[in-house]
Length: 79
Length: 400
Image 1 (tube, chains in turn purple, blue):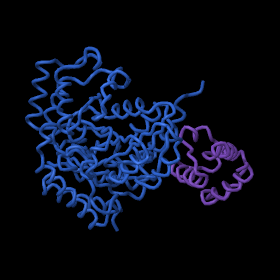
Image 2 (cartoon, rainbow over the protein chains, first blue to last red; image 1 turned 180 degrees about the vertical axis):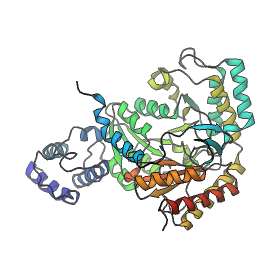
Image 3 (cartoon, one colour; image 1 turned 180 degrees about the horizontal axis):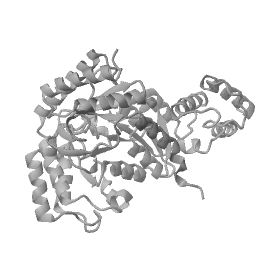
Image 4 (tube, chains in turn yellow, green; image 1 turned 90 degrees about the vertical axis):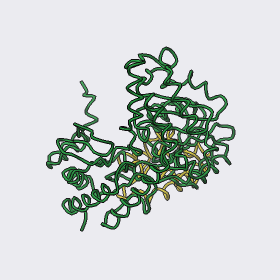
């Protein structure tokens, strides 16, 4: 799946987690802008893992700080 | 200069606000005298202990104490050395033999604490390119073991068999897999569906480590834990446990049937690069473990205590961590930290000590009053405890 198609799917997946309706760009950060706590991160990561049938380990999650990095990582993980 | 402590400012502020409300410091309690496994003098008051993990009440067992005193006389106050150098005494062998018998397993390795047992075993056996699949509510020592090692760490939702299975199936072909579970989860006192989880783990080619810290001595026909209770102990590759709960002293261990297990003594850094337990500790532990093999009556009484307290608190209107009592931990859910701390203080003034557990140690950012029962709590004490909870609950505005 290319970056645009992946981004479109992730945009739909993040919606229920974006409780404050923050406008999301590639530079939006999960901890800072979206205020995700550890439980939200777990549920959101699980939703993405299930959609794309991939694993995003905690080690990989540590490298992902913003929305753009997440899309890049998911594109890469799909091989 | 950047103050390296500035990162703790939010916690410092939270603590200051809590204490400014006039509440007694929940994390500054001092036990001035300990009268028995269930009663102590805390901050000047005689207090029933309901938050000590002293499940089997072995801390004042006369045989256990005698063994410790004798070891002090015969072997001295400490070993001053690592297990692999000058720190293995007869008592260390004796306690490892007691553990092998207790669990019916081939190998036992004793660490200086339970924390170090998880830290050491997990970080050593799961290396670069391996995967650790673990429950999100795992104890800090498990997380720290994951962090210290080089494996890929993949958490799944608490006790969710399907979530665990999905993750196992996505792991690349040929990678080493370790599933890490706990028998009893200490925050809510709930148990894991180990039978199903271990079946799924094995079907997917994973090795299984189960932390039975909160079940040893109490759950299962021989007190070997939740895996024994569910009939799957023989499929667990590594059992982690502690001496600081039912055994009644301090120390940690791993027991295993893995044929190559003994190599751990040379490669596991938290085992090698620290001093071994003092002789008095290993002799008390060995004596206590052997007595726990024949503690069926105490186990039955502890279950009775757990059932009575659970029902009493539920009937009084408290919200509990589990619908039914599943272990010797009964967790009472508080609406928030402020009222939780007020309730904790009201209980202390009644003469009852429980653990106040707060985020980030708790799941879902809950504030909990965690009660751990003891086989030495009398039926009368349990009724007294229920009465204290009712009065404190009304005073702190928890009960309507």
